Length: 331
Image (cartoon, rainbow, N blue to C red; front, side):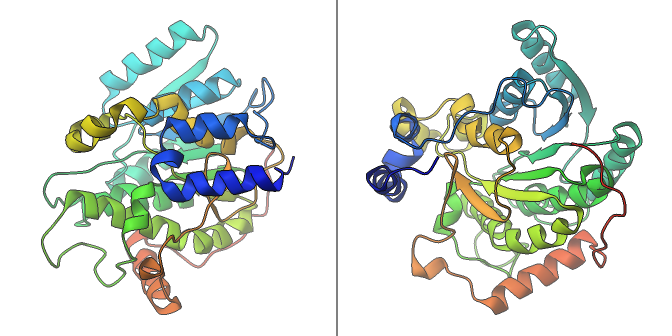
């Protein structure tokens, strides 16, 4: 259903004002507007497998619960298996009959990602969707096992390597990259993806990695379209996640009454995973609507910068020349 013009205008106004659009106010108002995209049908994911990284807290946990409630068999990908098991058991207590499995993987360690994907692919024949939600914001510049700046490794390199390795079982499926509205404040720094220049800032590093996610999204979507994979990025708005509580205490102190809960922040990830038909590929979403990649001209990347970013990603992630799969699996 297409929203009428006044509803679209109000939706855009909410989006550009940030405080109104990114808090729970924006979601609550949008849900009441004509043309709000319908919820996925009950049981929309029955018989289908879903993978969620960073599943042991915050948005990841809410995403697991959301897709499990729609009938999916959910694979929780976590670093801390003890914490992950508590989350799984807690969700199971609220959703009797939910089918969930725990997997250990450090998304920032590309070798561990490849190990996990090989194990997963040998046991799960068809994956409907992967939601790349794992996130970090280290207080000091930190490197991954392969020597990459950790935010970039967890938010971009790990998800790309994992998706590449899972392509045989993702044919016809969906990929969701959980980004951040914070990326609007950063330009594409393809000249310094490792944040080796200048004074390191945790929030800037986080936002830079999310900016690069969104800038290379069309190229990733084009690559993975050879396997008929729908690719999307989304941002959850301002949610009261563990990351916000730990890394942005001042921001939380000011905005806490307006912050979204985890389920509200995860709403679009769940919707993108389950809505039928599949949403258009290569778009950036917030509150079930496509959103612009830039709000101000100073963050707009040119083709040279985007090509430089793609070249770095291709080398760092070890991407080979894309090839189409010969078999299409049912999702």
